[in-house]
Length: 428
Image (cartoon, rainbow, N blue to C red; front, top):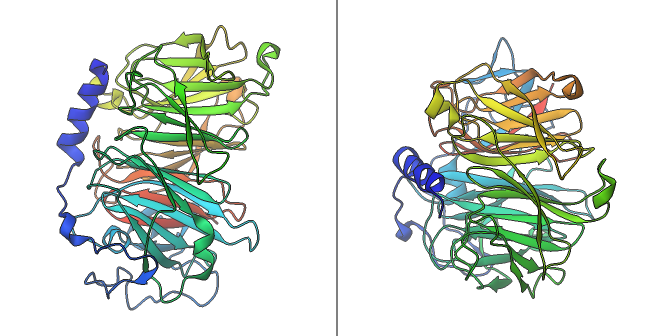
């Protein structure tokens, strides 16, 4: 494991970890109703959910309820205690699923204790449908992605493996919330930091795992039959990988058209790997930059010309404001740093995604920032909105927004917050 990963792990453990009691989780019984939760309703009883799609708390005069905001309304909020079904829980990753038959939208929200499934088809009146408990023990790191109508869940909890959950079960839940059980399980590794899925190829890539002989590098799993995942080796040529994006490439570099390309954020560099042939993955190039804190996570622009990267702890290590690094990937064999974008606060950046001309950044203590990247070719990025899920401060710390999911066609945006759970927001 790389030294940078060890440093970041210690930092995260120091600032984030809260011990949770596994006894707080009820035994799994497939779709059995959960007893009434002892956690009080997190919503203000004097402001009940509206009966239509209006926001519970519009962003007015710089606030939506107690949360600082600009241009984004708070549709609804569910506390982390309610989502996890336990006291002293923490939130972490999240993703979304749209039912291809009904068009309903669902939020998949991870916590120290497991994964919650929330119907947000009426975003001002979300319904917690149920929970899937952790496959082993609690952990501050849990990650979920979706392929077709299945969720795939990993965790840094020991002996967790990969849970597979059939999302179509969310269509007919009686008496929610219920306790769900997994529909399949993959045990080719125990713990893992993250899961990446290329929905075009039907492959999952497990990163930061203890899969044998990979040193934490990506482990390839064929999930084309979601209920029968098949391991197909992996790549150890650049050591530990913290996060990645994998695409079927159709960008400007003609040499790699229709190749499957993995871009790994590997703690101290970015690596580009051709993984088209799973039996012979090949490094295309690597790229680095100055003042590395921890090369954390990145995302292609839609045209695959630029790669937008976050370094998780450079704000802590070097004292700069939130820094986002933009790389020119026009030539995959020769990537280069194009420019840096600095945000308005000293908060640490975590996960960021591009959708169209917007960059959506989960910015820990500073909530989620909405950045217009229409001028990225001219080295210009402009913050046009924010929603701050951690109103206490915008300091350099490990609280607040862990992840943001901005890919619903409706424009609903889900935010998973370490301290406060699920926020559903929408542009005014």
